Image 1 (cartoon, rainbow, N blue to C red):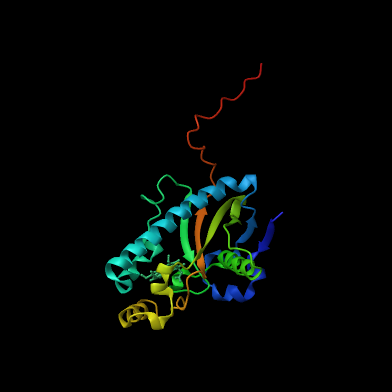
Image 2: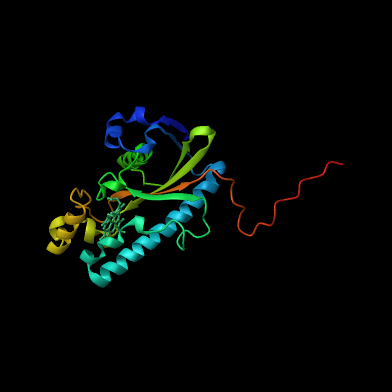
Length: 225
Ligand code: HEC
């Protein structure tokens, strides 16, 4: 029903320019229905992984800001500081990549590739229609007939995000200077709580589904009499 095949570059020629360096320029991405039974396993895994990442980020940022002030905490808001392996995503070997991206970037290294551009635009167009931003699942066709999946969660600005993403004039001169030093092209200011900020994305590799928790060894194959 919601399945749309989108040859990514053809649809968004203007955006491809902006992501000319993206390796994903020739990928085909299509949104699949996150609630369809065949996508639930992917959706749920992605959702759980993003949840752990989001909770960790919000906690770390909040603690760092309350301890040292926003100017000392800007190093904490680095998703790349969160390792793929290790505690946060332990037990989730199928998660092959994590990323945060936005249409208004602070760090150009977080620039959206074409498939992410589609997801960002989808959130925007949903919001224009008055629909709440929601979890999205994309199936990406890889060479050799394989697929991987991307699960996206839209993130909004919480009150504690405003310290570093709110209007510049409300920031201390020290914070402004640090942001300018590290992010000379910073576009991610001027936000108010409640606004759409960007996406957290996880990539899930093409591997057989993990058995459900508590599952015993696979059911024995029936012998023919
Ligand atoms: C202490 C300052 C600080 C706070 C508070 C903060 N951020 Fe950030 N944010 C940053 C910095 C610095 C970056 C750039 C990170 C990098 O270099 O990848 C960033 C990057 C991002 C990005 C990646 C896209 C981009 O623009 O590069 C998103 C999305 C984001 N922040 C969302 C949030 C949300 C949501 C909150 C609140 C839960 C938040 N931030 C709170 C400083 C902060």
